[in-house]
Amino acid sequence: MQGQWEQMFHGKPVSFARLSRLPVRESALVDSRLIRAAEGMRSAFGTVTPEEREEMRRFLKEHHFKWYVTHFFHPIRHQFITDELGGEMVHQDGYVTVYRFP
Image (cartoon, rainbow, N blue to C red; front, side, top):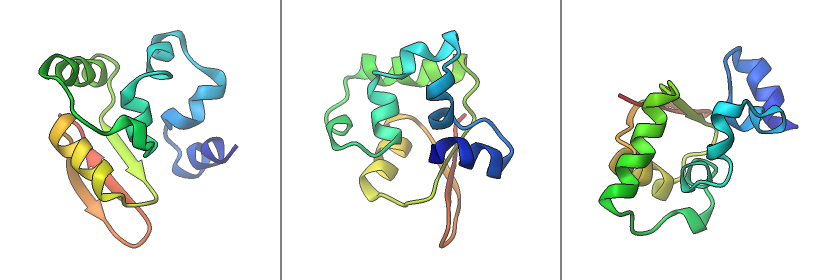
């Protein structure tokens, strides 16, 4: 699985890589809009209610998600991460885009 290779390559936990050996604390992540948006699935983008926005941000904070690294910049995903999840883009080059969550 590519996600597991990326976890070894980066030397840090990669949420996508952990889906095949899912910790109980992250089971709610699998079917959420949050993971669909992070993976760039079109069905994830769209109107987000204030309650849903707070729930997604709370999930990230409670589960200690501090970073999101993607190998493909996607402008709609970028907007979702910055506007809805409160992420800040802290690095971008030809290989990766890195966001930090508060």
